[in-house]
Length: 89
Image 1 (cartoon, one colour):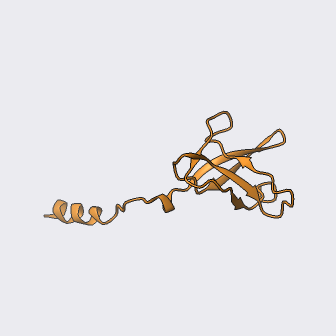
Image 2: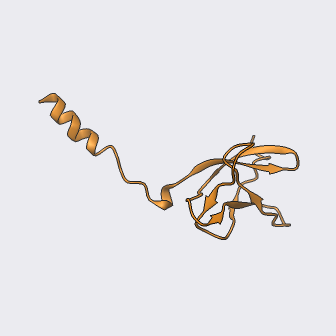
């Protein structure tokens, strides 16, 4: 009986993930230094890119899955604006 109750309780613990809930930890390279960033990069047809808050040049940075890895994909063709990772080590 306890196992039955436990199985029912666990069924409520899992929820389906939607594209709006897909957050990834990625990496961007600024100069020669890599920075870890948390991004909403839902898998799609576009490359996942970001701009940094306060950057008046609006430079677009490609987001990678690791420091030597593949570019992350996104459903949006527009870069997401994120806090500058150099300011929050």
